[in-house]
Image (cartoon, rainbow, N blue to C red; front, side, top):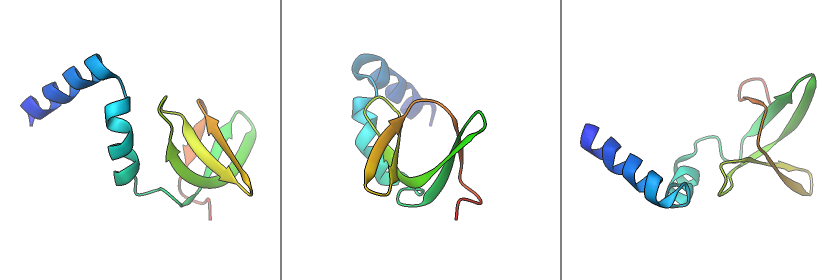
Length: 79
């Protein structure tokens, strides 16, 4: 396990998040599920559509898709 972690760290250091992006979204069990993004007192409800190449959360809200770089994601109670 340690060797795999060290290989992943080296890959990340050399290539950044791009090599992990597709695999992350493939394994994301919350993809397509309703979530609530809390930023201060604001609650933004949407459908989780993975993360972008910078690691930002992608939310679908009606016919709009937006990326968010900060906030607290609530997975429970979003339904």
